[in-house]
Length: 213
Image 1 (cartoon, rainbow, N blue to C red):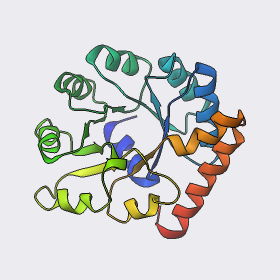
Image 2: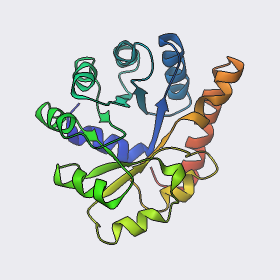
Image 3: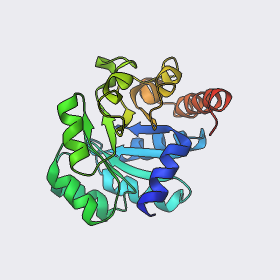
Image 4: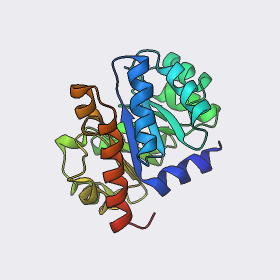
């Protein structure tokens, strides 16, 4: 999938399921349940055991979905994710080596930042979409504040996004939002992955009612 196509998919669907699991099986099942609930963009965090294998399995099972990798902390891990076929890479921080590698392989890279200094570094490195992280320590009004001096910056807030506040964030004009713990918490507690599907379906239905996608 080309860079433009991946970015267009993210812009179109607006909801990214951030999957942080305790095992390969759990990671695949949570991702599968999210896809069945209507979420088309999946981010497998590399804190999840055998994350690369999950990416490979998901891409084979669900070719219609866009599967990326998150919590990439270094160049070596980025290469593992790229070799697994990740459609996009997400980092919680600014890492010029990871960014350079992704540019080399023509894979979208979404680095993380939480202040103007970090955002400017990302923009200078050719990254127009930035992970606003951790969003739970900020408020949705920060998007307008950052876009004042940096109107060219685009954001994907992640951290603390849920069914109750997702619309508030989307109304600020962000490219998309990352939804993690609230999506999978109930399933982790009960062992019933249908909770992921139900939550995902709720998010998608709410989005379709209020935002043209």
